[in-house]
Image 1: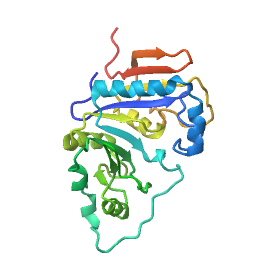
Image 2: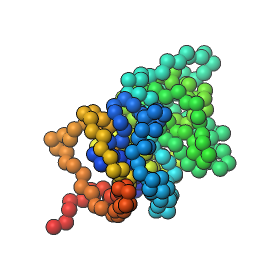
Image 3: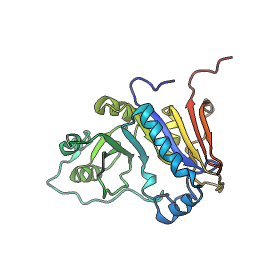
Image 4: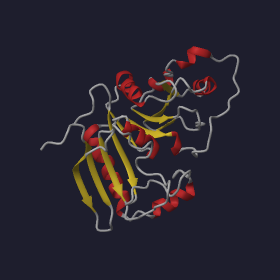
Length: 264
């Protein structure tokens, strides 16, 4: 089934252990050098080749224009909002809750793709604003502090405001399609954001690389975390689109998320 016509297709593309873990322990992002080194050592030699093949297939199938991450990929779960010193010469108040598109970013020659990060609490201090063909786009909410929005403007980082108390992922995706022409988003995020996408019925496909390893541990992040199913909710059914196994134990699985009742 294709994505809803008013939003981009969303593909969750992550690497997991056999038990679905995407990290070694809670509160330790894989961007931490030591944790990343241990995690990468769990994958056999074919993992790097499969990762490249998966990216090439996604590019061929959907030409994704955006990669999606959550703030938890950059800062520990315990990190709170950043503190900023307001500057009198900067915009303030309601003006800051308008989407911000720096001309030097949206008009930059060669700008093709977005590195999109959900940071409604304003926890990330940005040291890199672009890399190659990707420019940073931060998704925020009206609950995000005006001091942090002023900081993003000062740093000339694009942001999009969607939602009141937290980022409204569906609204953000729809506006990314409407305003930026984004037709496919690849989420490489952790379980918190992927779980939120799943609960909001925003996931269209899963592309999983599964390493021959088991992590275990109560509370260790998985590919899809978040609130438990409600009484009126049901697990999502999947259709296997492709499966590939390497002799060293790596698996590459591709699933479609089904929304219609299964046929009898």
